[in-house]
Length: 113
Image 1 (cartoon, rainbow, N blue to C red):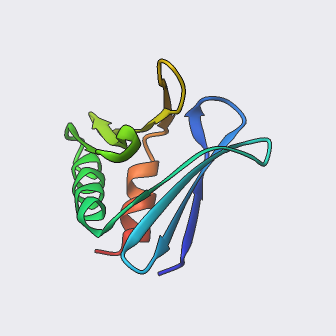
Image 2 (tube, rainbow, N blue to C red):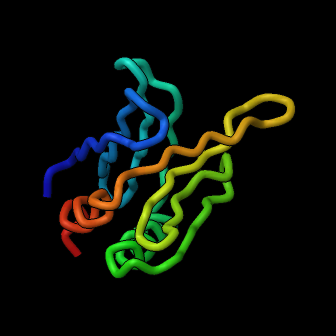
């Protein structure tokens, strides 16, 4: 399995989501114009939940997971994946990036499980 996968979200425009695997930890980074906008890690405990949501998305099902740190995670609505995270601030700002319908299959293949 490649260590990195870059996908282009539908929303927001001109953005990239990079998924990386370090050991059993996923790192998700959102970039616009090559500049990092957000990033978060999913420890092995949450990585298993991430895999579950991706598999549900491939089947066109609804599912979601959120890691407690920074309230970051991924959700599937009818197979369409959205990555979300809270940005620091008062109040925290919710960032949600939606991937196209083909992204679930690409992530599933990348995960290789």
